[in-house]
Length: 383
Image 1 (cartoon, one colour):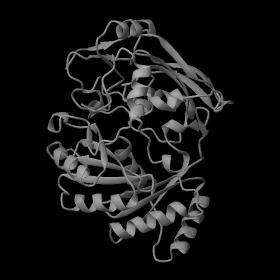
Image 2 (image 1 turned 135 degrees about the vertical axis):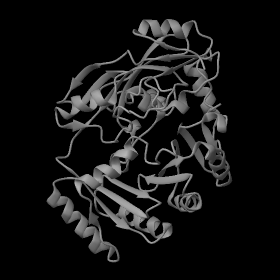
Image 3 (image 1 turned 90 degrees about the horizontal axis):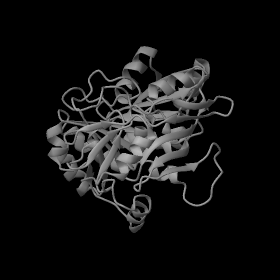
Image 4 (image 1 turned 120 degrees about the horizontal axis):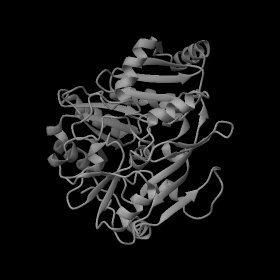
């Protein structure tokens, strides 16, 4: 593993890109599996490129440097009763951070976008790609590129900021980002209902997702067969919605969680630590409800090694895995024609951070060649 270089200016980052044969830019390394590269690739952190450049509460937009932590952004937005509805993960300082993490500090705004990670709020509001408006980044030739603006409809052609979502630093070195934000609801309340098995859970989740209710989040913890519903509104309104859901479902009661229960439920997920100390690796798995049932059933026989939390009405799975079981996860996903992205974990157990079935299209390499002509950023293949 190469030494981590800290850059303090954009100009210094441009020089490093121009004079490096291979380079990967990271933030606070809260997702270390995605920044694991072999020598001679030079790793560079933009954690010192930090600060909110501009915040216009009346316009519901902000611009921040790449290394700005989500915690700083969250505090600034909260002061104006605003927030990022896609629920970014790893906002808080992580006292149990992996030994190879940069500082144990929370995730940065650029790292969140580059990893393409969105939380439970994606169900109602969309993911990180739906909130980014503009991006400034250093291309593979060292040039500083500005794309997008402060309004949604302001450019023709490729929406380059969207291309950077999920690129994991392989298309360019992000230096600054502009996001839109939303007014924050006065309160959030969480409710739950129990299912008899995974098949029933899938039916209930489908009914909730297509229902008339505007639910912020619909999540499922497979071990407990428990479906979580989060609503952003005053408690009286939330209770009325929960009662209406129970009446509509007829066979299931939607029960409220206390505030303490809600915190204890959501907090470990939002820090991606819900698997406990023996299941510290985290794999993100796109899926549909039928695949969720199959994966949850597979996990039932490996409870001591694997834990599944399904989010966004069953379309995203978060798998907490024991390090020595990642190879088994890889084999299962390949057999099921599914794909997984290792966010945290022992990359050496699989040799890569993309698991299961690999999917690519000819345009992928064309985009890489256009944005990184010299080929200075690592390939997107996950090796």
